[in-house]
Figure 1 (cartoon, helix red, strand yellow):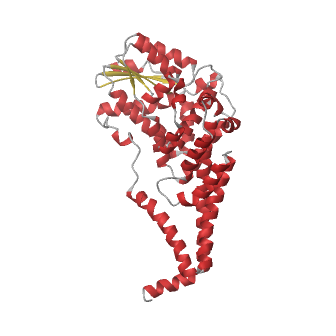
Figure 2: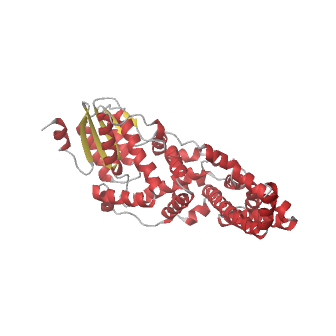
Figure 3: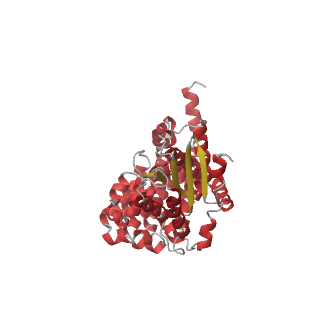
Length: 417
């Protein structure tokens, strides 16, 4: 048997071995809340004694696992100003979901990664964080989704936050089996093709590239079982020279296209122009009807969103007054404004920081926790204003239709038809 065949013979559902380009790679697939995975990675590191250990974490996630008190240092106003409100909410919900899944096993999310790091440290084996920063991954997933895709993603996140089910230990272990994992990936791909592309396919390539760049002739990588097959293929392709180890094209948030940048300005200017045309062509009444439709729908639904979020009365008023204006501004949304106002009026306390992850698992917790309520205000006022923009646009089109013949006559006159 060849060296590759000898190594491959050691493969299992949770471990893949490959020898390529004179190097050996051992890929250990885990479930992130599995006690068995913790024991397996410790044993694998000790048994394989690799030159380096690659970990499916980025530096920030490693820091958050090692320092659970990091939440206390967070500035929610800075988070909103940097347009990271949705990212923070997503991270919280996913962390809360993983924590709930791990309650049946008694293992905290990511502990198998820490186990691998600690075992490598005890053996003086260098460790390398090889995953893409979570902020980049989430922003790419958001940016690549259509409006409908964003709505579905937000809906699933919210549903998972408030779901009560817990996974039994045997169900967690089943996730490491190839057939179970393939079925789950198939469901994700069907319902969220863009999310699967970013969270799985892109990260398979990113992980493989950075595992390949780890020093030494023998590299052991600890990663989620769902990445095993994809990472193995990409490493083989890199070794064969059919794929470049450079993955800079998926390492950053994709820049907005020229068309989207133009649309950021064209759409608000078009709305203003249409309302102005309503005054000129349709008369004062039609113009005021269009203007009031824009103001009313945006103000009412943004205010209702803030109200549902349990916002302070001043925040609700700011949401209602600001939404018609921010809807025409490409640089800031009403959610950011409302969230900042809420945070200033009802300042989160240290206790809110301490209980945030636990509170994120229930509807009651979101309303009780001042910090989570800021995020709730941010999300619901934004959704209200977005819905208001669509309904206002539909109303404006309806009003234009009532004097469309005048518009046609004007166009004909301009072109001498």
